[in-house]
Image (cartoon, rainbow, N blue to C red):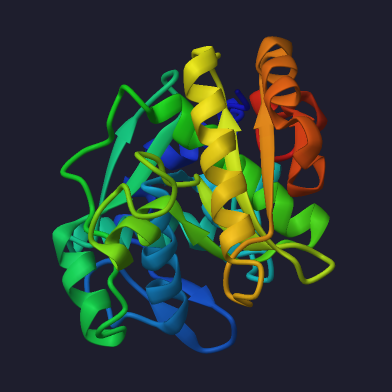
Length: 272
């Protein structure tokens, strides 16, 4: 995993640097921790992103939402972004916890963030945030976060729909393919709708066979549905997973794309 440099870590952890210091931001606009904040369009987009993806560190948040904001610190960490995250946390829209190592702090949304989003996006079936980060799936979820950002920034993927959004919209987790839901659905650079499966660990042969069969059935039954995905993109960490999937896919290769996770260098973070 990428970690923050000592300089950025110190700045991030010692956020008291901002508490009594009103900093000039873009002309005459000022933001200070001493006043209640008014949520901006970017705040709502950030909170919705975190609702969808469960969490993100300051590195991913800066990459997604603060690339065009000055001033910027080293390693892509924007000092204004840090200040804004601290404000959102202070006002109860975010919580944070450390994961992986001492320098990887993850931000995740609160019930207050969810309530605010449902007022701005009524009727969209937004997923509810968890009370904390699930340690059982945090590695998979973090790699999925990195994969999404790389697909969007390097491969022109758009219109991402997360697995959590799919479950919330349908009301049950087994409504897509049997007992499973894709890790995400996106539109690729050619305009094709694609389901994404990220396989961090090797599953049983029966599980792979069942998922492949369910995907083939679903795609064939929905050939004329313009809103249904027409391909499944597997990104796998193990060569064993790749070989099993290729064996079960058989004659339906046109419905699947299988790639090794090494192509996206997920283990080394966003900027690898």
